[in-house]
Image 1: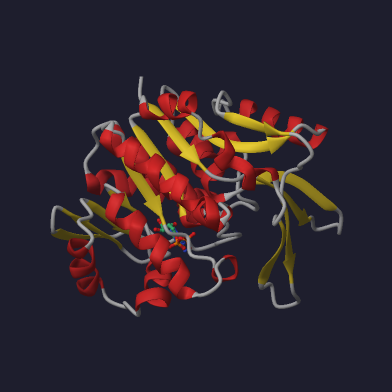
Image 2 (image 1 turned 60 degrees about the vertical axis):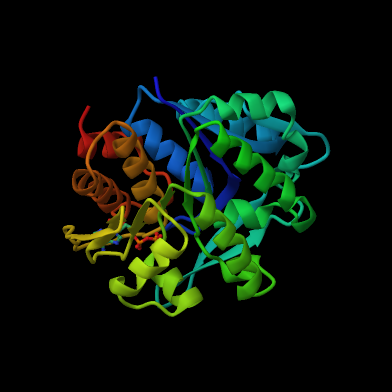
Length: 307
Ligand code: ADP
């Protein structure tokens, strides 16, 4: 059985329903990836390495993880802290914006749980996935602990996958983000950015520029997502562009990249080739964006992806 560890933060999500009430659910980029990976590849052991509080809301959150069959053995409990929260607002023109209350969340305490025992478990994984948001959540003075952990994982033969998921407001400035991301690029086997963030951080607008970037950091496999446009993959220096089918009625693009990542990772770990993995991942993301919210009803996902 494949054993995957995903490292990040899950938050309480509040969004307004059409009748003006607030709907509460649970989401966060890496958690979303874990959910879709598990839904699409049920025989994988998908573990979420995070911290929550000891409060009832944290209990409900962990129950939601369990309902998704995400393994909670590596979910840590922090006394006196609660989960982070975000709220989605939609203005008159339909534009979405996000407000966050996460600066003092339980998940920010995660580095104190990088014990020898937990590192031992993580080293037994086949894959470790994290994002730029996972990195931003760690307090800056604890980042060295994270990089030491990643080094140990790599030395133990765990494959490392990273999505930069650049969120400007989580970083002091672009330079700080780039320094952290470039450490991640150097240590990752598989990097899965969106074209937009590569443009924001590096000014890339074309895939050809990305090839040089890939070799500079020694990235074995790079998958660049670009909304409805073709997905660019560079593996061992070879560039391929894989067309996907654009979705006509997009309802909510939240979690498009996260669901893509989950299914792509599962497919690649199952030995499926790059092009077919992109097709599976794009089919999943294409379904996710036709529903509201980060985590869509499991039946709709299952209907799309098959048994
Ligand atoms: P992110 O959520 O990281 O911004 P993208 O918007 O690039 O990511 O989307 C990730 C993936 O979701 C794309 O590679 C594609 O497979 C799928 N996707 C996004 N928008 C569309 C769309 N309009 N039609 C079809 N697929 C889409």
